[in-house]
Length: 377
Image 1 (tube, one colour):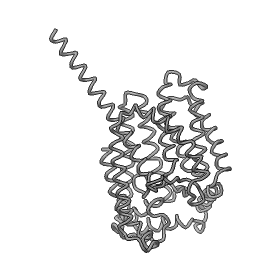
Image 2: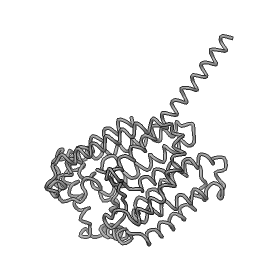
Image 3: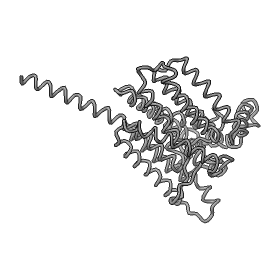
Image 4: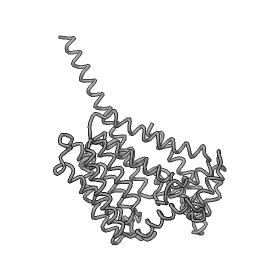
């Protein structure tokens, strides 16, 4: 079912990105319309391949990989903040040599922190209430990585903190300790915001969103164009490739791709996409419920929450339920390595499911073998 959901969203992504990148082709002038189509299609295919490879690796090995990549991501985040590519007044990207492809170290940090947090909680279930020995290393890890991400990308840092709190809640961390994590997180993110690159933008977006609720004239340009796209889409939409707002809506192929989906495929398409993400969350939670190992359950829960919460926030922004964040829509927005990291996360979720099924099969086989031996005796 997870494979079916991912393939459906991937097909829709190729269609909508091909439609929404028409403005990029027009601005570049010397670029043909198929260039973005082929590039995005290759990345989608690569993410599916990575997803398949990740699901073949036994999920217990990700506990070791997570710690290594979590420690690696800390200097990468610092290097990116100091020397990374500057886009929209923030250093979020590093360029991979040879292939000349940009990637956001925050994607690596987010994925590795969630997996490492699941491993630490699973290992310490017997003394989960020990603040010094169990929770202090966890709080330090969450605080450092969230603060480093928040200096250039506050919305991603906030979502990561929320995801970590959900994992800790499922991992039976006492409520008073969760409250401590919230306090530390708020302090850390506040310091990151005050010293980071996007302080003015972050505060302005929140103020503008609050003011726009009382005064329609203060609605940001991006949000206004998104509302027009949604309103003109109607129930069934204008049809694939017939969007008009893609020519005026900023970033219609990434941040506001959901508005283009609603314009071209209407309310039917928008609700269908929402249903697919909720179905993905449901399947992830089914894996958690059926998992017989703490690490597998916490890992699947954390990655499922991270993907679906980001999707819900992106869709909420497009329809005016939240301030503009700049977060892409997982599996649908045009992106580079973000698609690869999304495929990796989904592959890990499938690896947990695959591992649990294999253990159940081997356990039932052992039971059957012992039963046959008793009957023979």
